Image 1 (cartoon, rainbow, N blue to C red):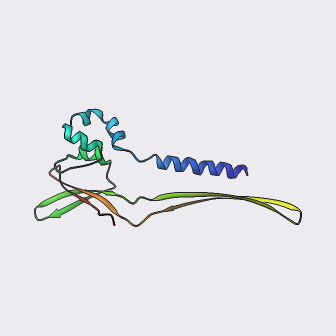
Image 2: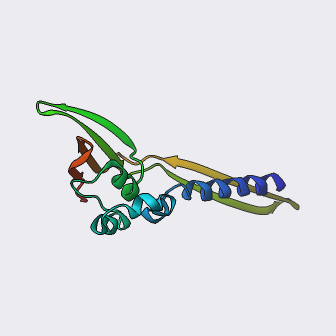
Image 3: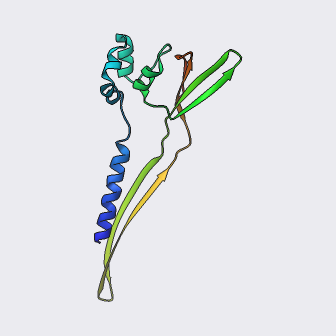
Amino acid sequence: MRSSSSLLLCVITSALLLGGCASTPQDRISQNRKLYESFPAEVQRKVSAGEVDVGFTPDMVTLALGKPDQKLTRAEASGESEVWVYIKSKPQFSFGVGVGGGSYNGGGYSGGGVGVSTTTPPRDDATRVVFVGGRVSAIEKSVSR
């Protein structure tokens, strides 16, 4: 049973560490206070709320939304643009623990188990931020169903 306890402790610790990977606008602002304070008041308000707007710089978007999950380059007749993709659906982690016991013909037995699984839901782009000339020129958000 000692090895089951150790395994359970490892699983719980891993789950807590994975859950702590997400950062908030406030976390990013506190790590980049000088940069944040250089923004106009309206930009600061939006960044603090995790919002972006047309005209934002990459630094403003990074503080508001974090690092993108993917960067794309788009070529059009009018020129090239860079697209930052923020994905809503992330891999999910779950685990379960079971313990049981009983007796059979006068003898006792016990058992335990730990299950761990990960799933990746269907991809659902939450936000795409399009940059032209180093400034946000368009923002696309998926519509929830």
